[in-house]
Image (cartoon, rainbow, N blue to C red; front, side, top):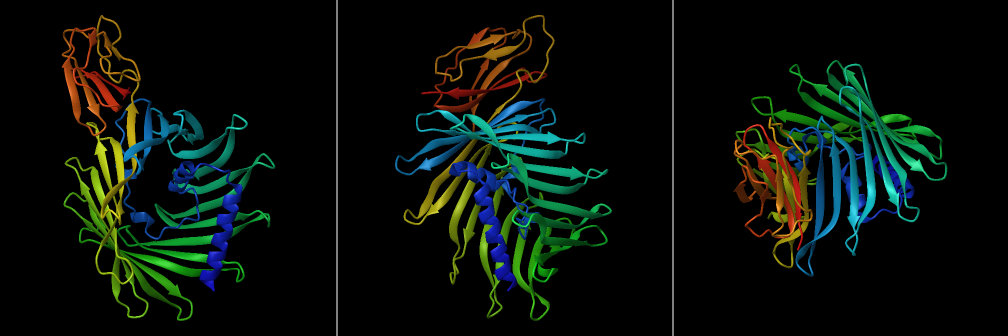
Length: 463
């Protein structure tokens, strides 16, 4: 009965959500889903997720703009097709201030899609995200979604509320709320409520409580669902955390479900983690307990590898279908970084059953644009700059200004894998021409004296 009720409630929320959402292109909906703005999302192993987001790094700088270019693999022509771009503007604290998502049309025109505005408090904690979507018929930005966060005097998160923009009333409409309770420095519980518009009131959805050992390590998380017809909470599942001998890394999470008839916890899932000597996760294995013979069966395995700088360079996701004992490939993802450790490329491949090989699926490329000058050098000459046409065509001149003979200046060009394409000594020069022919794509042009000056600019090379 509890599972049926949960399914009905979840379905209702999904339908109410889709009813409020405008008709967005698929690629924009994908971006929204990936951000987990749905507060009822309660992934059982959320605390131990290992995604590429933690490997996306910024070089410290005062402001700047980052642009992500999204591609899909065209199986017919066997080439990457540019689909969208995400432009982030950063503040001096390396936090996003705005984000713009645009779609590339068939006639190679960028069309606005979603626009984000971010706000922060005096402690640089996120307080609000406002999302607008572009209405091409009216040629205006329309409010779409808002998330607000509040904090206590210790800057601990106390609540998250989300709202959708109602076209009929032209006002923000309440959607979900998540509140947090602390016991000293530790999170003791959180509660999610959803606003039932047809009832005009808030309704409980789920409740999590947390327990810790004497050292402050989390040892359990217990989830309960709200049963409206009983006007009470009902136990749903819990997670038990096991650590290695050092007590630092979680090596296994035991997932248990509550049996209402036996009034007991039953083991259902195992989430197993392995680490290398540097403390980086190298393997994740999900096991599920069979209901009839009580045997544990491995279902999902993810293997992670890292480069010499500790950045994740690849992960491979495999699974075992029902009654199969052999691992089947599902997807693999490769990451590339620039010389500063920023993730600048992510390529995802899916396993093709017909081809019995990996097939390209999607690609993201990052172009990092720093402020005009990120270092200061005393000079009697003009301001130090390197300017060129953008898009750049092979043979174009790069104009230099303020480059003295004393600075040992070099002009370097890198592709998005971090490979140096060319390096030229430009001390005392006013111009430079690249000797190597660049293929169409994105590049980073760096002018530096290897001491106190470093200028980085984005170069787009056209056909």
